[in-house]
Amino acid sequence: MVVQHNLTAMNANRQLGITTGAQAKSSEKLSSGYRINRAGDDAAGLKISEKMRSQIRGLDKASSNAQDGVSLIQTAEGALNEAHSILQRMNELAVQGANDTNQSIDRDAINQELDALTEELDRISETTQFNKQNLLDGSFADKKLQVGANTNQKIAVSIDNMNAASLGLTSISYATKETGTAPTKITYQGMKFNYVAKNPLETNIASAITKFKGSIDAKVVSTDFAKQYDAKTGSVYYNGVDVSGKTIRTSTAENAMSCALSFNKAAASNEITKNFKDYVTTSKTVATTDKDVQVGRPSVADYETANATLSAVQNAINKVSTQRSALGALQNRLEHTIANLDNVSENTQSAESRIRDTDMADEMVEYSKNNILAQAGQSMLAQANQSTQGVLSLLQ
Image 1 (cartoon, rainbow, N blue to C red):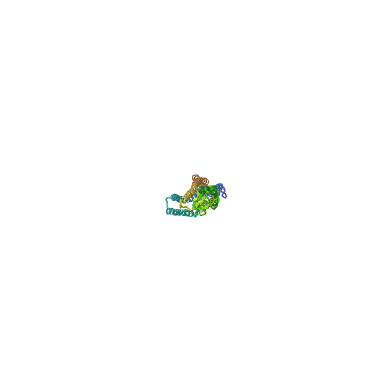
Image 2 (image 1 turned 90 degrees about the vertical axis):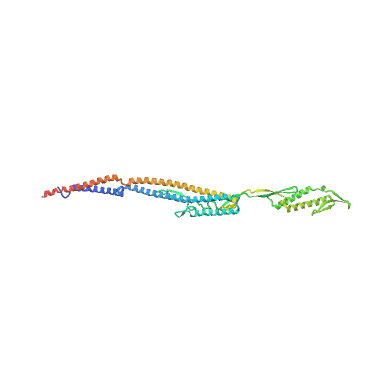
């Protein structure tokens, strides 16, 4: 029997310390709800779970980012819906203005409304914002939405400029072929001259006169003049004309012919020169290429201008429709992205929970076991301490 070393008590105390430590850990796990409260609880599990936590929080924030992207798209799309309404009204006005039953005062009123609607398109483009960022002025281009927990998990967003100029409503024009009339020939007393288009008017007149004089030379011969006898004087003569057209007497038929030729040529030259329009024949001409007529901003000043405006407005409607369609497709994509992110986050949380969280039922069994062992250890320690009391009986 010894009193310096009570090995039974020491063993009971050691076992009680182990049980108390295990009981304390179980109590900590039960009170915190976590199986891993420090790296020592499960070093590998801690590393894995912290990586998962990073993923979970990143996925949750990415889902929030995607939801912000949907809100941004809905803001832009709502503004473009109004732009569509404006363009549909402009289309209606252009159709109305193209009708030639309108007087100028009616078309002026239509133009005033077209101007106001064009200005409103510009205002919408300049003032539509999301989080202080302009959406429709062309500056919101190649933007990135971070829709993942890791680097470069992004979706690009770009919105075109939707002002009147970008929609083609400030540089309206139309092409037309210019028509006109051009001289084709000159006709004088049955004589004809084909007009040469490449030559100037004066050259064509001179050439026509030259040709007609030649024809006059060929037509007038000396046999055209009859011999005349003057009974009073007993002379023979031929009737000719002087430059003024007054009848004169000539001694020979050749002289009479020469006078007539001079007179007829002078008369033809004088008549064609002075009254060219009465002897020219014209035909309608069309230019070989189109001519651009600049309209500028929407207008219904006349039929052609109204039609050019109508075409430009319809093109603008197509551009806005294309942009709205692209935004709608992107919104649908983001909604699927959000659903996927939420699903991945949920499943990752489930995996992280299996690593990090305490199984309360299982740990309660462990706690109860340690609690019983602690009580038993305390009882055994008390019994071990009583075992050395037998030494006192020897000392009595």
